[in-house]
Length: 196
Length: 280
Image (cartoon, rainbow over all chains, first blue to last red; front, side):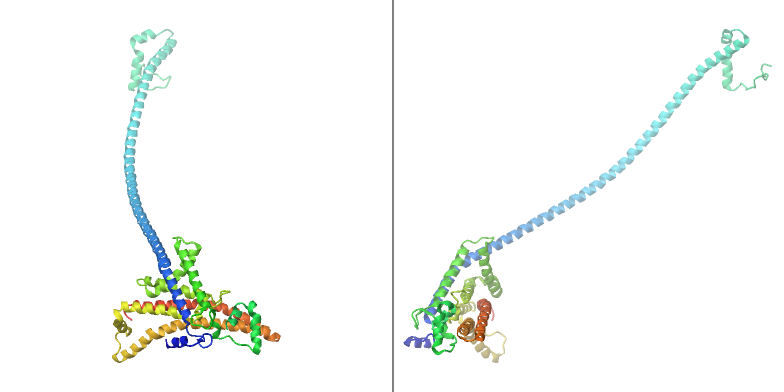
């Protein structure tokens, strides 16, 4: 202060040479005004807007993070749900498989018994049919054999024996004996015991 | 006196004048602190309008225009210019303000920090911008004004936070000191808070800018003198080397200019952090 008053009192203060390192009053004043103006401009028009921007950006980022967290939680829940469903489905599938196996076994057994029954039935039918055909063949053979024998005998004897054989039932009797096993096979040409 | 400075800024225009001036006694007159007083209106006068004052006002106009127009159309997704603005602002806000003062308290001081940083940075960079080429802060009045603003702010904040002037003075001495150490600490702390801090804050910026510009002046004016008035090839060559070194120093100045703006701002933040803190 004292220095400044000295300076103002002097005729020519001597700024360039005598006082080069002291603050010149006009420069001080300009500096204060300039600083004041810039400070006021920043305080009212620049810093608040930039702070708003920072806040908005922070909010946006936080919101984004919140959203992301939510999405992640949802995804986690969905995953758990899917896994539970999958587990259920697996259990279901294995149960179904077991059931099917059991069912298949019973069906198989049933079919097997059915097939066995059918087979025995078919066999029986076949047996019966064979028996019947055999009987039929037997009957027709019996007639045929009788007739042929009589024919043969007739040729041997020289006359028809048909009526007589029919009357006397010789052929039938013979065949009956044959069936019952009474007839003894003999060599041809050998004398027959009964005839002798 | 401003003739030499002018010649440094517009060598092609005023070189003959310098040559003429140098020829008066024939020897080289080294540039000194006198080159820094540069009145535009009025001469050796307390209220003369000086060129640095005009540069400072222009810087305020430029900064105001740049940041207000950018701030008036901010978008969540930045344009290129907004990216630049956010870069500067984010640097002051986060790297200096928030990190030093702390998350809770730094917001009210942002206008001050931002004003100090941008004002010092632009005016320092003016030191190497063609056609301006004068660091405003090499006139001591401007660092003093900025320091005054910081000084008043941190004392007012501290007095408010620490329950009045008495509380503030009590808080200067850390608790738990031996009784005989208290007066010594008190004197030291008062000296630090009330005299050393403002003095160093203002003089560091002023001195760096003055010395840097003076060095550039010496190399450029000296180089010019050697080149034009050296008289033989060797001296002319050393003049060219002097110019080359001046260019190197210009880049070095750019670093110093940024660094000084940064240091001033971060110290401001530190002092404010001190003021808002609960204990010393």
